[in-house]
Amino acid sequence: MTELATRAQAFGLIADGVAAGLSAPWRLYLARGCRYLSLSVGDRAEWTAWRTHLGCPELSVRVYDVGGEIRRSSVAEVILDGCRISVELVEEISTADLDELLVVDPLVEPEER
Image (cartoon, rainbow, N blue to C red):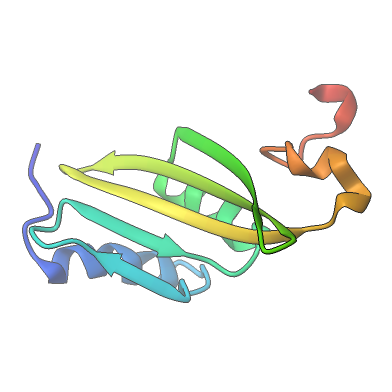
């Protein structure tokens, strides 16, 4: 397995996704040595598109309180060519819909869960 050895290769991976029609992430973080690349996206549709494009098998969801606001952080991760890549979405969630707090993939109907 080869490694994403350069910044050009890491950002080329993102450019390939954008060229394929995905929305550009609103924030990117590339760790020194190209061992970790983080993409932050703006909404659930973008998060789903990027995790599907990259083939992210690992998903985690964390719900937390920030000064009276409830937020949900959804993270999808995959290791490609020696680089851990994560796609993150942070959403403000209302307590009006408590079921939404724990839903990993809202595209799945409740009866299918």
